[in-house]
Length: 195
Image 1 (spheres, rainbow, N blue to C red):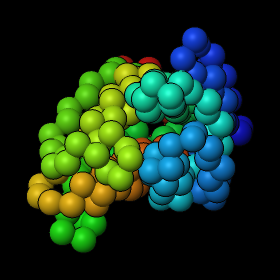
Image 2: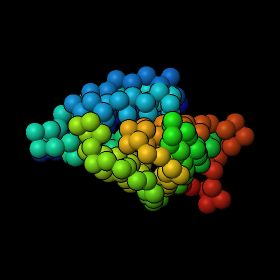
Image 3: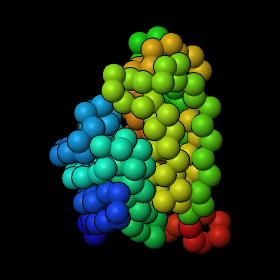
Image 4: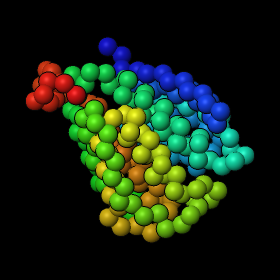
């Protein structure tokens, strides 16, 4: 069964089309109008091996907030839809990822319950023209709409670009583990029988 999803979301602030294939090869097609964010989403696709297509038009004349957050909402919803009933998946994933001087851990659980912990400090307000506080907003939106626990912990780091990039790469790698199909897992990976 194909584990794919397509989400369309239009508001007064953004118009987004997002599709993904959990069993892809990490092929990205990303156009959000926000260069740094496109770079991060491309890294996410490459390291998760999820084929990801994002076309977003937002009110960038105001700022980048609505575009980044709404893409996070759509990505979370697509992940929840594509993973389906979660039969046979690993469910949990974690990665401690080095990025130059930075070390970040991402740990997640596709539990059907949202919980978000952000223990990351990005030292500058901007990364180029990108508002660095939007990294947190993005991951919170993903976690909430994917109905997953997501914990992001920065052990140390000093370069804002590296810290942001490490959160995307580490979460991509953790998600890649969690969505993997375990041939020994015949049902839902929970003693409750449902997630």
